Each structure stands twice: as C-alpha cells, then as structure tokens.
Image (cartoon, rainbow, N blue to C red; front, top):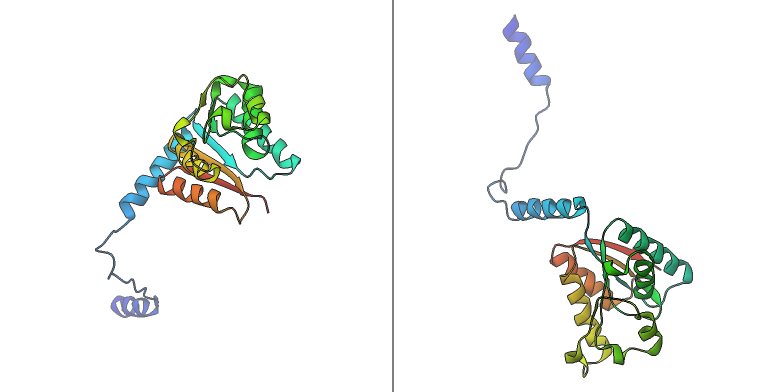
Length: 190
C-alpha cells in the first residue's frame, strides 16, 4: 500500500526542468562578485574620495541641493574632488566643501588658473588644493575638460554626476567611471 501511495505522490509533484548547457562556464561570475565586493567595501568606508561633476546649466535650487549635499559629505569626513566652474555643479560643490572644511576639497582644473574666467579665479581664492595643467594650455576647453574628468574619476572612489540626457561629455565620464569600477550615482536634471 505504501508503494502505491509513494508512486501516486511522485506523479502529482510537478517536475522542474533546469537547463544545464551553460552551467559549465562562468564567464563573468567571478568578476561580478569581485566588483560587488569592491563596491560594498567602498560604500562601507568611513571616508571616501568623492568626485562631483556635472552640468554648468543648473537652476539655483539644484545648485543649492548640490551645495548642501557637498557640505554634508565633507562633514562626514569625505574628500570632494571637482573642477573649476563659475556656476553650476562644480561651483556648488566648491562652495559646499569650502563651508565645511577647505582641506577636504581638491579642485582639478582642465588648464591653468590664468585661463579661467575671472569669476572662477575669484571662487578659487582660499582653496588650498588646486591642480593646474599648463600642459593643456593649447587644447580646446572641451578637450581639456574631457581629460580633466578622467583625471578626477581616476582620483576618486565614488562619482556623483549631475547631468541632462543630452550631455555627451558627462555620459562619457559616467561610462569611464563604471568601466573603472567606481561607485556611480547619476542625477538627471531634465
């Protein structure tokens, strides 16, 4: 009788088919696990090197949010890395870091201070850690900015980027950060 009941139970339980064709290869599994472990370790760090870059064309409310965010990040012990800018994301990041702790701010310029507009030069007064690039003096600002974004990303653990969907330069920077296994946070402004 037990044999009959067991055979009926076996027939009533649905069977699940699992394809095994791809189970012998683990193309990206170890890399993915390593990448996730690296990202988790970065997130858990008490103090990070956070790059903040983004659009120059921002509403004042967005600039205020970036400034407040930057101030809070610096107060938590993080170092902020950005570029120069008279308005927009970089300017807001500089203002926020300068309010909290100027020693936790690093500004990497695409070219030299002398090549910056006078309002950017004024904003950089008092910033203790400025990196200039006289070797890029003959480059267009667009080309120098692309190189500068890569340098900023190379120097950070995490990237926060404020951009629009049409910003090719910033999308390229985000892709570069992802390829280099940085923790990336993107805020679209449109």
